[in-house]
Length: 484
Image 1 (tube, helix red, strand yellow):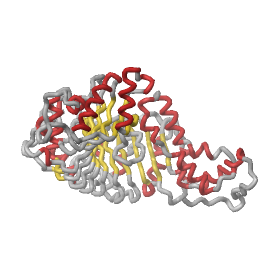
Image 2 (image 1 turned 30 degrees about the vertical axis):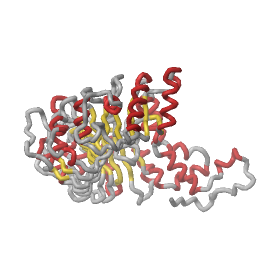
Image 3 (image 1 turned 90 degrees about the vertical axis):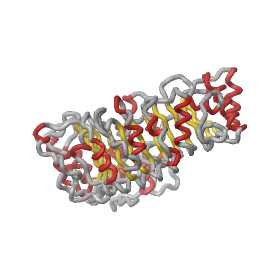
Image 4 (image 1 turned 30 degrees about the horizontal axis):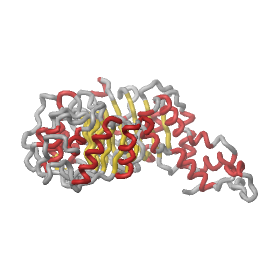
């Protein structure tokens, strides 16, 4: 990271300095790195659900204000901050934003630094037209662009400006558009599959289409590796458009679907097995509320994803995976699948969970986060306290390769957990890692203390605080809230 200090200002020699003075004499390169580190949200942000909303909002605001805060500590810190162009690339535009501030950030970022814009237009913003004009003047420098808007209007069009445009440096695009006015609706490119950035965005790899964006503001998907399709706002895209969206992205590795794709009366082909080839898909998340949860099965049946490693299912009804689970050859459909997550649900039926274990036989990492106080159904199967048997398993037991189990438990579940762990050890399929939420050590009474100690000796027991970031290894994403 290059930092160019003014010629008449250098970091003083630190020999003989008191410890309390050292922060004013940190070498410029190191200080610049520290500034960047402070600007990046940490893993703590993934646990936002456990803190008050206003505390989280305040901490997020601090992340976006780091550049300003550090530049007011001392003259030396200010010089380093102003010389670190990339520190000013993050430009958040929201309520009461001023044109002057945006101009200052753009000037400090220099002429060649790529920019990361985040526009929240859900509030009234003075001088909005001037601000939007200023943002689009630097379209060739966009690296990340996210917009939240209640409505796209003809008076002040924003996303519509991207129709015949190119964004050569754009890597991440998030379009969260909840409505569009009638005048704009007359001119949207309904018939075209690629509707915006038609002159090219060769580096674009991450796209979030929320609300009406997936209907009216679709970019080219050729280079996309991560795609979010979210909250269709009651306008369903149908099977053919869904298929076209996915097959237009040959490099797609991570797919997240939240909300219905077609309504309960729409037709999903009955002969759709493996009709949507996704040769690069590694991770998949699905959450479909309401009356069309049969689409859970339809999607899993229709896609061909031989490299799929991770599957997250949220708010799944008890019966809606039956078609997939009973599909001939289901157990060989996703040969690379190792990680399975149930989010906000658990099977109450032991028999249906046994079907799941048979259909997805190679799971090594299972996460079950549910909102009830009942013990996870898997514990009863692993403890041998169920009449349900897993087809294809030599011992009728679930997931012989399972090594990591993450879940929320009550103290009263510890004995059942120990029974399950002991039985897995006896039959030669031991668990290795247990990640638990909902139990604090101070909640453990004398009766449970010995069991808790035994578990800690036999397994690696970690505290389970939040679902892993998605996709795995990605940066913190403040918009990824629908699966948390």
